[in-house]
Length: 184
Image (cartoon, rainbow, N blue to C red; front, side, top):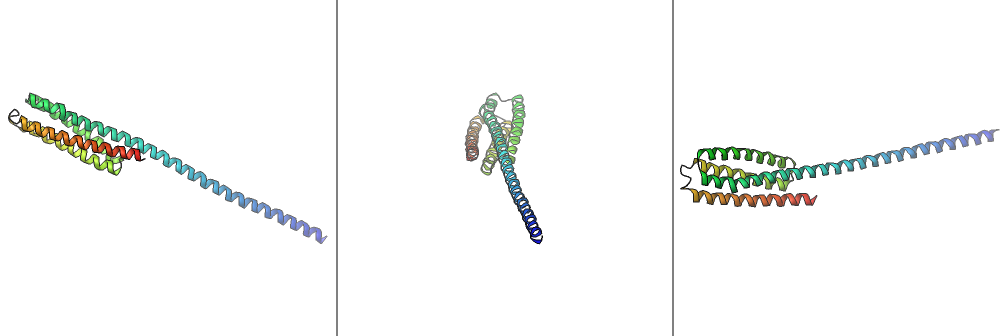
């Protein structure tokens, strides 16, 4: 009788040991699966965030580039026309247009500063400063000049220099944007 009880105790102990080992192994496997699932979700979220950031950077870069092009167009077309026309009404209209352009240029610049890569932010700062200063300085000189016709040659040369500097800064900004977006 003792051998039957011993055999049954050994069988029960072996079965319980097997059940405990199985539960332990299942717990380890579930923990590993949970870690892998968490890691995969983290990778998915990181990829999603990168895609979102790239899209937002692209929008910010494009918006700033377009605003810069509008400023450049203002320096190419509107201010030279103002030199030809003169008059208080034309000056007031140019000042109003410049105020709107400068505001839009600053808003677009702020977006690049918030979302852009370091190199693009640095190039944007120079582009923005060059555009802002060129517009303010040349328009201020045109408006404050008592005789626009007498200073036309000097103002035209300053305007040409401002357009060249702004165009060069715009190209540097585009190069920085291209490098950032193609490097991702």
